Each structure stands twice: as structure tokens, then as C-alpha cells.
Image (cartoon, rainbow, N blue to C red):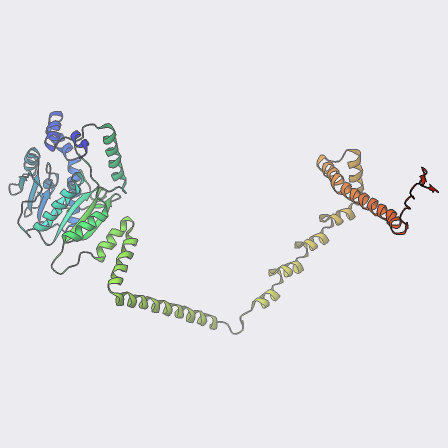
Length: 445
């Protein structure tokens, strides 16, 4: 077991510490996370908007705390409410604030929901499963399934890593691991894949999963108060709504898939589910694919017919023109046509129109310009760049050619001079034995 649990306070210790440090109202607001009125209004709006809350609904509020939801639901005179928690001080404060004698508040010391089977419309867990182990959360959801009527709903908030608020909470967990300071609670994350697995195994249908950012809750006039105005507001934690299946219902619905898609990743999930259904029912997938293919072919045929009709409908006096006709009628549209229509636009036309634009034209226009440039280059008055380039040309081109010519001429001359001697001259006479040899090579007998 992790030794970090030694650095956690119990819920009773947290509440008693807050009561010693703050006035009762502030301490009770801090005990449930602060913003007592605002979050009570938002929870009320969530139940009305996503769980089908009516003035006569029956509601079990698991982890009711100091009663922020009970205070808001007290405006419905015929509503049946049960709040459960593990801290007696919180339940006592909630009972006093709600001021509804018919509202029940029960202290529990184990994971369970005190209620009869199939007796409740709504069971809610606001900021409860975020502080429990996964095994505890699963047991609570199983208990909720037991007490719910068929078609009844479970509403709970949860933390996930992908949301900004979730990652902020995770970084706080990291600080706690590093510093090992005493903390008031643990923060537990529940991936959506885990929720789907639980829902399938427990017999729930997922009706909603969304993050709590960017107007996840719409406060209506029936929930608004002086301090919390009507309108869309962020809830913070992510939200999930599960519905208990009636006999004969399946565990998933297309509506749930579409709603879940609004948070990203839904397209892949829908495609996977469609593929699974197609694999389970091969004929259904093939028929749908055939219908889509036929519809596409019909659409293509309609487009072709409309295009042909548009071509046929026109002015008979203005027959359609081909590309060659257009090019002949508008010579400036092609390159050759442009050159013929606008001689000055092509290179040859520019040279003819402006003789000074080409080298020959420049030389013809200013005959002495080239000679003056050469003379200036020899005298050292030419620009540095031109003089340098000309010197490089002389050193590279002319010198190379001169060397090649000299080598070629010398080689040819040497070959011409030596070739006849090699062909016509007889081999030199060998001296006879005993004969004397002169310095000029002659012999005497």
C-alpha cells in the first residue's frame, strides 16, 4: 500500500479543522469546495437539463455534504429528497439550511445507498467519485442501479486528464507526492473507457459524457438566483449521465454516441461501433454500402445530365468555340500570338524595337563603346569588376588555349622530324671484332 495515505486527513478531521479556523457558514462552504450557492445552482440545472428532474421527482444525493444542492431543491414542494454523507456535522448544517422537514439526511459509514429496489428517479454523485478508489465507485454505481427505477438516471462528475481543470488537479497531485504535506483528500481520475466498461457491465446506457468547460451547463430561470444569473456556464469537472435500462433495451444508443462525439474522439468511436454492428450483421452493412454506392452513381448521372443540358441550351447564333478557334480569334492569348500581336513583348521583338536592349544593338547604336571599354580596361580605368573578369578570362581561356596550341604544334613537329629517320635510315653497322672505332663512329679495318 502507498505510504502517502498516511499524509491524508479524514473527512471529520477536515471539517473540525475548518470550523476552528472559520465562521460556520464559511467553513461549511470550504468543506464542499467553496462557492456554495453557485455550485448548488449549477447542480440543480444539471439535474433539470440532463436527468429529467421534475418538481415531483425522487432524488438521492450521495455525498450531499453541507447541503448546497438540497437548499436549491427545497423550492420544489413535492420533491422527494434523501441526502447521505459520512460526516454528521455536515448533515446537521444541511438539515438546518434546507429547512424542509420532509427532506431526509442520513449518516452512513459504509459504501451503500439506503433505499428500496426500483424506487428512485435520480441518483447523483457530485464531486464524490473524484475522491474514491475505482472499486468504491463501481460499488456505488451498482447500488445506484439497484435503487433506480427502470429508465432512472445516474448523474456524476469526474476528473479526466485531457481537460484543463483535470490536468491542474493532476499537477497538484504531483506536488503532494513530492512534498508529502498533509492533504485533505485524494483526487482520482476516471478515463471514459472505464466508464463505458462499467456502464456495459452494470446495465446502464450512456446518455451524456462531456467536459465541464465552455458552457457545459445552462442555468434556467427556474434555477437562477440573485447571485447566479441565467445562461450557459462552465461546471469545471466533466459530467456523465447513465440511464438504467428497461427490460429488452441494449447497452448503447446512437444518441449517446453523437453526444459523446462533441468532446473529440467521437468520430473514431462511432466508426468503430458501426463496424462492429456491420460485422455482427453482414447483410446490413452490405445493404447500406450498396445504397450509398447507388446514391453516388445517381448523383453523378444527374450532374452529367445537367451539364449536357447547360451545353445544349444556348444561343444558336453563337456556336461553341474550340480552343483552336479561340486561339485564332485571340492571337494574344498564345505565346506565338502574343509575339505576333505585340512584337515588343518577345525577346526578338524587344531587340528589334529597342536595338540597345541587345549586345549587337548596343554595339550598333554606340560603335565606339566596345573599343572605348577595351581601351579603358587596358589603361586601368575600367571598373574593377569588369577588369577582374577580363583578366580571369585571359588567364583561363586564352592561356589554356595557347598552351594547348603550343603543345599540339611541338608534338606534331617532333613526330614529323623523327618519323622519316625511323622509316628510311638503315640500322647502324656493328663494328667487326678487332676493328678500331673513331670518335665519329667510322671503323677501320
